[in-house]
Length: 420
Picture 1: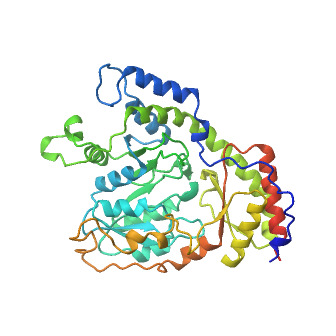
Picture 2: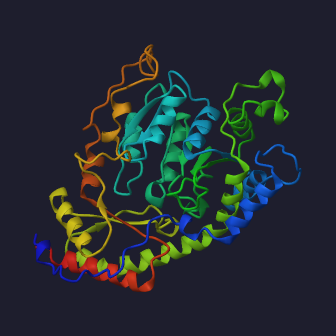
Picture 3: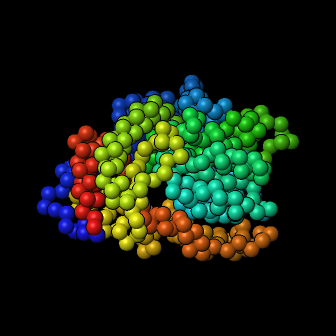
C-alpha cells in the first residue's frame, strides 16, 4: 500500500475532534441545579437526612425503568458494581463458570472472579460481540451463566444467545455499559436477558462521573439485587428475615442520582445525534471502502446501534497500522483495536491478572478448588485477535459539527484511495 503518498501538508480535519464524553460534554445548568438542590437539602444519603422529601436515586430508578422498559431498577456505585450485583442475584459462586467475550472491558471477567466464579473467554465474531458457535463450544457441566457484552454500542446476537441459554439452563447478564439506550429487534438492551448492567462512568453515553444501574423484570432477582447492594437491603425492603442474605454496600449517593437523572433525559438526543453523524460518514466512504476491500463491522441490528463508533476491518493487520497512522496525519483520531505491544484491558490477551490467575488470598482464588482445571493463554482466541488487529476504530461524538463530519469523510476517502 502507499498511504504515505497522501498529501500531509494540509490535514483534512481542520480542528481537533471533540473528546468522546457524550453525556459529559453536555453537562449544563440542569445538572448544576440538580446538584445544588441536593446540597441545599443536606440530604446526601438516599434513605434519610435532616430534611425529608423525595430521593433523587429513587426518582432515577423509576425513570430508568420507564425508559428501558423493565419492571425494576437498582442504582449502584459503578458499572462493575452492577455486574457483581447481577451475578450475585443470579446465584453465581464458587464452582461456577461464566462465559464472557474475549473482547470486553476486564471488569466483565473480574466481576465473575469477585463472586467466586471462573471466567471462560469465548471468541467474538465480525460484530465484535459473542460468537454463538464458540459460546456453544465453551459450555461445560459447570457453566452457570453468560455475559453478552454490547461492545462499542452495538447489540450482540441476543435471539440466538437467549435460545442457547434456555437450552442449557443458563442465566444471562447483559453488560450494557457501552450501549445505554441501544436496542435489538426493537427491545432495549439490558431487558432481553435476565438482568441488565449499565455504567454511568464518565466515558459512557450518559454519566454521573461514576455509577451504575441494574435492571430486571424478575421480582426474585430484583429482591436479591436489593439485598446484595445494601447490607440492610433485606430489612429495608421488608424481605422475610429467614430469606435475607448477606450483602455489601454499593448504594448510589444522592449527588450521583441527581446528575444521572438529568443525563437520562439527554439520552434520546445523544443517540439521534450520533446515529446521524455515523450514517453520513459511513455512507460517504462506503464506495471507496467497497472498492478497496475494506469491510465495515457487522451490525446485528443496524437500527438498534447506539452509533458511538465507526469500525471497519482492513485486509490484514499489516495494512491496518499504516492506514491508522495516515488517518491521524489527516487529523482523524483513531486506533487499531489490538496490538500485542500496547496494553489494553478491553482485550483478553492483556488481562494479566486473569490469565495468570492471580488472587488476593494466598489460599487461592476461584481456580484453585474448581472442579476442573481451567487454563488461559494469550493466543487462545485467535479469531478475536485477528479481527481486532485489523479493525480501525473512530469515535463518533455527538459534538461533531457538520463541517468536521464532512472533513472526516474526506480524510477517510483520501487515505483509503491511496491504498495500493
